[in-house]
Length: 414
Ligand SMILES: *Cc1c(COP(=O)(O)O)cnc(C)c1O
Image (cartoon, rainbow, N blue to C red; front, side, top):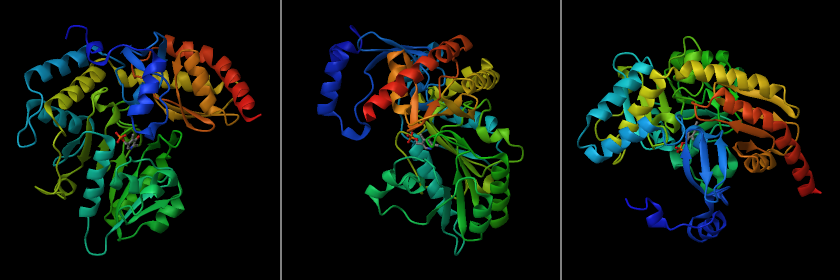
């Protein structure tokens, strides 16, 4: 298009766009930090021409960074060939992506995929799957304190944060939250009335909190013993984020009954999925019991295929594991950092005070995008193509960022 998208929007400064944002967008996100206009690789640029190293990757979404040439060309050519068809029809890209996901997840014969457009929608499908595991008297769904599973009503029922839940009650019933990582509580809660246990292998929104391998193994054993489904929410941890295709693959012997994906799957294009493992679980939801208009459309599926192909052919798993270890090791040595958690390129670190939001602002001023998951916790979820040189520029800048943040947070409360 002549003039590109600017011809549709016009051109304005960041401050002007933000003023117009406040007048036009529902205020659920607060005021955006910056107005971004373009990106390339691990860098984005704002409306005023400032550049940032993106260490959040659209919240663990931009697995291959911004404007990846191969992903972009596959999406564009699929869109120019066949864009949307509805699920009255299928397409080669939809079938091929489902097959690829089954292969990478090591799912046994009889496993199946349902495509959605987002993480929350993948969780909605998972909740419906749990409801269908409903022999008489079986209706409870267990989730964990600190869990984040999305904002739609079913997903929200699984999410634990009161501030997200309470304004929208009553939520779908039957969900109980157990203390995080507490094996005794899990043992006590499990019996034949549990339809499903839903957990994130690493809680992302809660500040990158991993479940121990022992907990995941016990979750697998107990759900199997009592006929409940083990549903792993890998929306944030899946698609090579932790240095394995899916985070649960770090733990021997833990194969879920179902797994939700989204975020990184489309390399920035909205794609979500529910994978059901084995014939019995895969046939719980039958024809006509669930559906979607956009889910699994040819373009979204092409984005997923291009993303997985690129990650696989570039040796991303090894790179992610190695660079993650490098970052965690060096973060531990930074003054003011009191704890470092995570796996691969999903990293959380705690600060020696409640100045994480100020650190996000100071990082932006220094040219880095990072994220605060709480008052004293920072999360990094950069593109998986981040280089060690790029990571090092952040590590070099971090001490000064934290000093600035500590000072401005103290001034703000003074
Ligand atoms: C982001 C996230 C979701 C929700 O995904 P949306 O695409 O925002 O609906 C669900 N579960 C986990 C673990 C997530 O990180």
